[in-house]
Length: 274
Image (cartoon, rainbow, N blue to C red; front, side):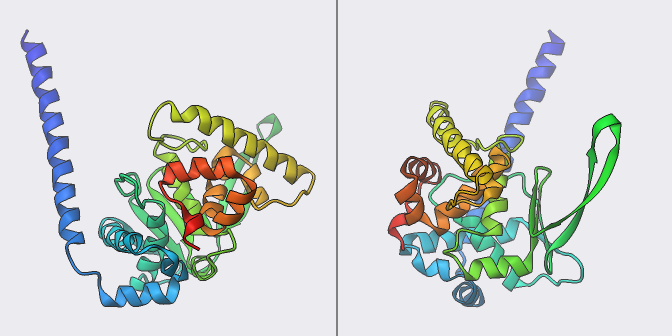
């Protein structure tokens, strides 16, 4: 009986601690968003984010509040000599927070750090081949998302992608789509949806589109999606997220069912912004 009581007490204490922490976090977020959006940050948005001007006024206000919370909670780390400043923070935060608009969000709860390199960076990987032979392989990347709480970005690519918001290619949107996907565990192209029943249609539509892109990639058939999306369901979700925000009219015209699924997930309708 004593053991049962002790376990119950510990369980209750854990619940109270979690509830208390959640209350403290929400209180801090309200405190942060009650402040005026800094004027220098507004100038950065104007200069770096032409996409911002296409947003409806209510979403512009919501995005600015999201940026404030994101910058307060996430740690930015400069790599290879780059110094982190507000230009970097605001430009990255603004694009990352586009994916959170109109949604109930905990601001990428698993994400702790954003590592920023001046330009494309090199990643060393080990691959296990036949006969147990391990091969070292180098890859040049402009972005990478880790489930263990990190996103790595090239500042050069981030700036270029922000400046051209209609080409369907954006490294920040891509990597933060992976972060949403990874909230459900390993990235597999099925992020946390609103209801369990939503997964049936999501799986049917995305599987059909994924198979179509794989066929297009194999036969060099033009697509509005990068062939990189054909390498895995996780990459497919990241690629279609880029297109959803940057080429919504094309997505709606050629892939209506897919547009509908993404619109329901993100709770946004960007086809009517541009």
